[in-house]
Length: 338
Ligand code: WQD
Image (cartoon, rainbow, N blue to C red; front, side):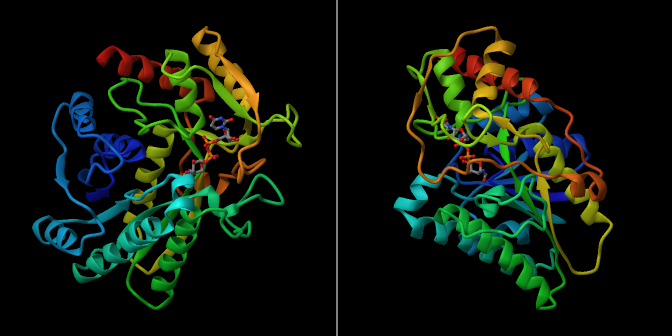
């Protein structure tokens, strides 16, 4: 299938492009490099041995989308393009609503005009807020988001649901990601946080490489075994493969559909466990200290992924050790390019 991948030069998008190609699909990348770098395209070429079709543009611009859909045969879309910095979204909510919600509406309207029915939407476990019961299933009630970023994911899911309920001939899947970590084993692509990383693993690898002085663990006085937060850290390649599985599932469907899947490992690891595992698998000592809690942090969350296992026939293949080994290899590769 010819699949338009918006945000396809991003962290999860680029890894998904690789897996789409390996599965025999033909991805077309649409990206404006607002949260990625052009060098990712070179990395993809080094992995795949050929250049993936790429269009530079903002998917919130209807004229860009109109051009893409009228000059390419598109069978389906994976929509990654969005801003995702939780803290920034609190400071600048309009940017997040305009980009994240606006681009989804523009995309669906263009899909409708060109009779493209299949869409996989990048959602997030953030819609669960602080769950009362873990692991969370797709039936776990969503909670009011604690950031405009999280709210754009909740709104995005509701847009997909209501468009299908209105009787439109679409097949939509929302994938609720947990914490994507790691990098492609080739170290040709990986996470490229801009500025100081807000996410844990890139901050760890930048500390280990000497780019950051020390990691601050945001609180060790939570109601968990070791006092640090629990998360579901999933290797980005496993997450990428879930998008291929979602499309293969959509391929067999022609009636209207909106469905949701948790995409995680189904396991919870604490921040401290992750730090200790990073040190162990990479045989190094990490500089870190315990600091104050970070406002808005969920204490404990990890996913029940049995629905994706069963319906999408998708299972994780990589371990936390694989993720942390690959993340470190990628950070070392970045340093060697400097
Ligand atoms: C993880 C844990 C921090 C940095 C992410 C994405 C969000 C969404 C959900 C996709 C927390 C701790 C972190 C640091 C630390 N994903 N931490 N020191 O907050 O779970 O959210 O997944 O939509 O976009 O941000 O991920 O990596 O920021 O934090 O102690 O320097 O690591 O307190 O417990 P989070 P994170």
